Length: 560
Ligand code: AMP
Image (cartoon, rainbow, N blue to C red):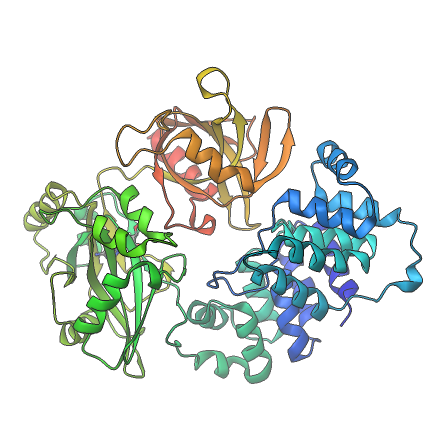
């Protein structure tokens, strides 16, 4: 299949704003595609070449892309840089350059979706010495053979900046429409496989029943169940009387897969963090008494007294690539388990929590490093309150109240788990831009532009500027400095406008504030008053950041 066919769809999607229209465009397009090309198209529609949980990323920086465009066109890097500075969009630059090239189109080999996909996969897989140069060649090869429009989308895909407004919900609904299957069934399979290409393949070949029969695969992460914020203990108990109350540990969510002697650990963002936690791998091998299982819990940094250390310390372990054994000693961790979803071939999602817990208790032999989550089974408000106070006194985040009759529900749903913690109004927002600082902050980004998520389009809408709470110098281990933030953001820059830069929405920060105000100046229509940095949320992906809807709700609730 020619890449130009997909480009036509990109163009249509880019110009339509209606969600329904986008769904129809995609559905009509994919339903005619054969199995092999379907995989490429589904990935490329998401602007990616690997499933979400795969650690390989395209993530090529602008400077490298400038080199690739230069190599493909013969135009100097400085000229391309100049064009980039003017338009702020390398996709457009590539389009113009390719349009003006002198080389005859006769020598061009038409690009197929397969060729684009394979080259981009190779780009993502390059490592080590000479890898930059190989990446440039792979991209340049595509650009040399591309039409102007194709060049634009290739560049945007490589920069992870496709901007055609296809969020996960749209793709899910398009697959449902294309193969005439209900949305819930498509969603169910996606939650288990976390890979739309796989979901579309099963839907096209085996239809609804195929999707219904999808089972978790050991070593492939599944979407996790989350809690809904509750205002009070009483509010939850009014609805649900049959509950278990657990500590809400201040760490990161871990989904652990065991197959014989092999263990995998996945974070809530579905990242594979197994190699960063050899201590937990060992503990799981010893404590999980099942041949095959998938269990869930929280990993947190523990001090000598058994209390939690700041989350920022733990986060040093989550992305550590070297000196892992030193870190194991320096920042010890503990795992507390609270759920099980798969046991020796049996899928447990539909079983009520009461039964899942029974199975979990049967297979866990507690040790120093691996324990069950602290809990009480009661609906006595006074006892729950005492338990909550104990959790807070021990330095944990709060409590979770869980409906014992509820099945395992992927994502955040009413009727399952409720979280109670002291500061519930903090927002998790995404850094979408920044401004270079002056004075003491010169050379660093001195203020950050925050965005909230629009789930319909997958875009991030500006809702505030953040400078407070980030430190000029590290004073305690948990501090985050302007310098660190600057280092994180620099490779993500996509556009520069004077002192302002726009960055890829990748980094999630937890922010407190005094009030939410209406604001015509920001795309979201809202602005945070006195926002303050609380911490980096490396455990959250941008798709999990707070939505415009939540900001609206908080705005409404503060009026009362
Ligand atoms: P939040 O990030 O505030 O939406 O809270 C959800 C997170 O709480 C989950 O992703 C878990 O990492 C964490 N958590 C800590 N303790 C528990 C628990 N006992 N049950 C469920 N989730 C927990």
